[in-house]
Figure: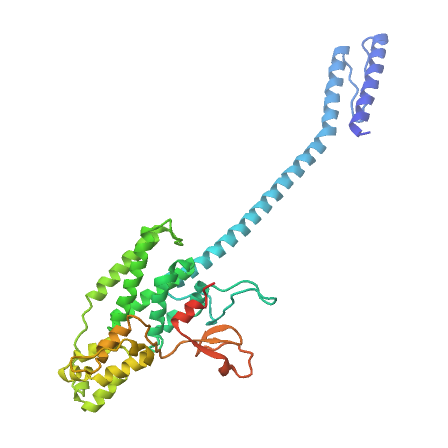
Length: 395
């Protein structure tokens, strides 16, 4: 039983005794019977009021400490919960700020410096099916992100290789790229265009690349809904406008005439100029060089030069099926070359290509290497052409 109930019962008993005494004795001093209370010499009504006041006072004295303690406990709990919520909110805000900072850093690298982010190892494991050791597969977009094509275009040996690869992707694989791979693709493309505009080299290759890419984008944008186009349609429209702007800049490109007081190509002996022409494997380059001077034009029309070019790009059975004779009864090798390239693919030649390790199933650049476990790694390497690169990721 609580102390409040005991005190109440005592007061009730004392009130009953006082009432009986007052009824017998009239107006006599009455003691409330509560420890610490004073004796009151008043009438019955005054005694009654005093007892009520004392009862209220004593009852409040019993309740106030417990109520105060409960309020203090509630205030303490509320304060602690608020502090906990503040701490949790601070931790959450801190995590959000950290993630936002990482995203800003990544966007800075991708958008401003136009470089690929996070991937330091320039090789990728090519997997087409699940095994006991590995599950999943590798996509074309992942390979494009990891193999650092942004740095590859700065190497003159790899420039044509990367351009050809971008052209093949533009023709048939553009819709298979993820959002990050698309971003890297157009970052690399912008670097290529800027490089050509700055050094005035290889504009013909980039014009062909942009022509194929713009044609593909026009078709995809017109048929949006019928084809799977990753990303917002407005982004692709902006990309198409950027490509058209690049095409206009390349069409207006004026290659400045170089003034040199030293030796030029025309100063070389004829046999040296002829040997230089025999090193060319691109027919368009031979024709362009032949337009420089009358001497080079004469050398570029040599029948033996075009015969060597046909033999380099096509098999003997192929050009035997499309034999073309001139009016004098001789084989017109130049006309044969342009006829054969309509029916057969030309032989590709690059200064440096990607390598594929058959033992490890890893695709990598020659200078970066890869973690090979074979006893003789060089015997397991296979050069990868641009078309072979695309075929590796067709499932």
